[in-house]
Every structure is written in structure tokens, then in C-alpha cells.
Length: 230
Image (tube, rainbow, N blue to C red; front, side):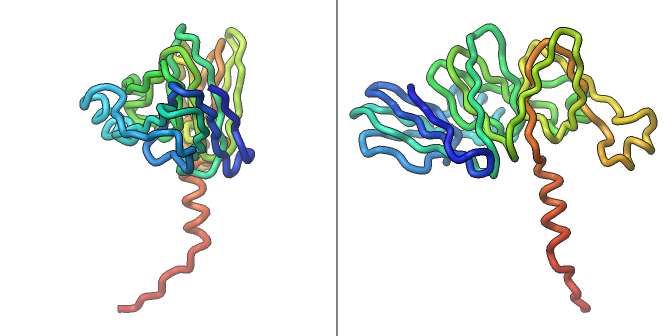
């Protein structure tokens, strides 16, 4: 399948060119437009329990959509629901990819999307919750973010500290620890960071340059204050 990521890191879209018989799987409602030779259908990518787990445990949508070139070659344009970038990650089957909520956009055939549980500390204190997406198989997965996606490539033993609201994806062979942003709780809280994630290489951590919580707070600060006096 040929594809191209369009329009930079603010209003990104993914254009896939399918040959007859090829298909691409995407999150529900991702299709913007498609050639008349293509067909679209809803699917769960597994059993009902898998769909329920994605919906209620990982915060994802219950269904996927599959766009298939069943009647001839054609193009489909896909876009995520949030403002931000799209990145392509090639999986060779040797590891699984952990993906944040709302991070999955689309994938080629051969890629499976499930859920997996984090450990107790990660579940309680990371903004991802106890369950994250588990992406595996052989093919290409397309991830979306809020803001641009930045890759941090760590060599063996190298560490990086990430605000957990900026996490997008990381390989399953990389573990991370939740810790205070600085030495004391007061200092950590007033720094605005509180708890952070410490990753140790080797591996690649994908992060987003913006986070929804901070953007929501900024929007709220611009709204007029209600002066209802009842």
C-alpha cells in the first residue's frame, strides 16, 4: 500500500492508495473521503470482549472501519479527531507497541489492536490509566497525537523523563517508572509537573508536543466569567 502524510503537524491527514484487494483499518469515523471503487465496513477487529475492552478499559472506540479496494484501485483520505500530527511506525513482529488513548489512527492488514494492563503504580499515577492499547503484528501502524509527534531515541542505559500527559507510544520491551518531578512533593507540585515518567533505553519513545489538559485549561482561561446573580 502506498501512502502519504499530508498537511504538516497541525491539520494532518493520511492519504492511502490501495490496489485492488488491499485494505486499511482505521478508527471509527476517520474516513474523510474515498474513491468510488472502495468499500467501507465496520468491524470490531476481534471478538465482542475485545471491543468492550477497548471502549471501556482503554477509552477507545468500540468499532473500527475497514476500507477495502474490492472493486478496483482507489484512494482514501483519513484524519484523526484532534489537531496534531501523524506518524508511521513499521512493526516487524518482534515487539508490541504500547499506545496512549486516542493514539491509534489506522493500520495496514496484519496489524492487531488489543488492550493491555499496566502495573499498579503506572495505572494509578499515569494519565493513561490501567489499560493502554497494545498494537502488534507485521505491517505499518499510523499514530496520531495532540500537537506534533517527537521521537526520542535512547541508547542502552540512557534515560529520559517525560511528562506523562505527553506520552504517545513506546515499545513493550521498555519499562518506565513513575516518580516525583523533583526531590520534594511541594517542589514537584508547584513546578506544575508533579509526577513524571522515567524511561530507560534502549528504545524509542514517541511524545506529543501538546497535551489536552493544558489546552483545555488555556481555553477555559479565555472564556468570560459568568456573573449570574440569582
